Amino acid sequence: MTIVTRFAPSPTGFLHIGGARTALFNWLYARHMGGKFVLRIEDTDRARSTDEAVTAILHGMHWLGLDADEDPISQFESAPRHVEVAQALLADGKAYRCYCTPEELTKMRESARAEGRPQRYDGRWRDRDASEAPQGVDPVVRIKAEHAGETVIHDLIQGEVKVSNAEMDDFVLLRGDGTPTYMLAVVVDDHDMGVTHVIRGDDHLTNTFRQIQLYNAMGWDLPKFGHMPLLHGADGKKLSKRHGALGIEAYEEMGFLPEAVCNYLLRLGWGHGDDEIISQKQAIEWFDVVDVGRAATQFDMDKLTHLNAHYMRISTNERLVDLIAARLEALTGNPLDDTARTRLLAGMDGLKERAKNLVELSENAAFYVRTRPIPLNEKATKLLAGEAPDRLRDFRAIVAEIKDWTAPTLELAARDFCEQGGFKLGQIAQPLRAALAGSNSSPGMFEVMEILGQEETLGRIDDVL
Image (cartoon, rainbow, N blue to C red; front, side):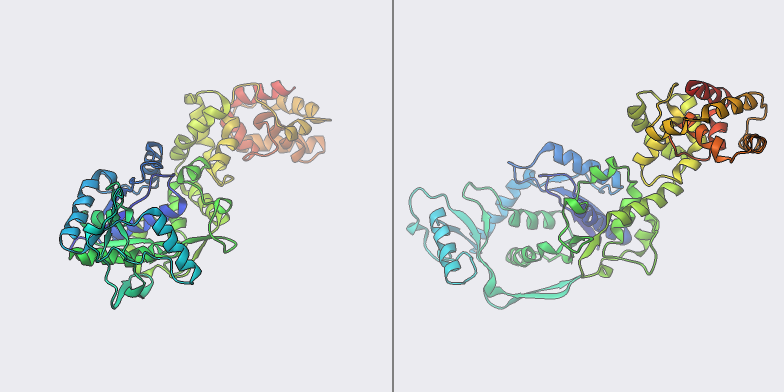
């Protein structure tokens, strides 16, 4: 049997970080089992579903590297099939038309609440004849749920979970306007798509008990279910925007690398010994849904940032230059020409050690590609006060004569200059940094001088003098 997993987001918003973890676990399990991963856009809520959200979801999935093995399916487009199943259940006596008015349903809930009973539909039309139907009411179609015995789920993550069928209500399959509900659509789609494993958040556990009723009514084989705990914030409370519960596109914009995000999400609720850094290849080899923990997991932005810094350091210089190119052009207002790219590639080893994300990397790298005169921040301006200009002028005269323009030669010249002048290396290096980088921080100053080249270095010193 081919294992088939699925991810089924609703396009009423962007791809949430929790949804991304669900997609990742489904994708990994399919890859681990040599199976298939499919994507379904659950767009039956036409009022709230948007093309923008669909585009964002597909982009987020692609950015994370979680591409499906087939073209995405639109749940809305399968509505005729959903209706067909409901009609089959009606014909087989396993569903019925309910003519309750909205007012009756409201009164039903109010009475149940007042009496301390569960606020469920009481089944008043379950066995009534349609001849008793009131005029002017468009009936809904409800499943004739099994009320005897119990429903048991042998959950891959939660273990055995069961509920008394007496607690089940006859939930709606088709609304009064004839459109299918989520509860019907998701079961029909999972069956028709051949989904063998439904791995999703444990907030769907109650839905699963109801959906099993529908599988049984249709005589369909049940998929295996795995309900993983939801993410919490670092404070242990339900994950919200203040914890970092943002759309995946926000993490891309904040300069995180997709492999860092996937590695971090993988470790939220699943682990492989003490391994923290797990490549995609290792994740596919090691991941099994039965190893996902039952306890809620905490999302910590600081830990994600720390992990991202590691992936920044091991990324190739060429890739990082490509990733920050558009950011740098927006930041400096200048297109990246060959000279700028050459400088960035040469300086990337020094830059990526100091950055935790692509935003920081872009900001730190901007001085390499700015056109003269480069802007100076407030701290750089202060470093160029007092005796600094005189020392820079004297040092400029020395390095202007250097033929071997390399970092070791430049550092040796600076040390000789300081020794002869009777001051510390920092008293020339810091004004140099201000002049060449426009800031009080940068990679090693002599490395910067070598990368900028003699002409550019002298020109930037002249600008501040």
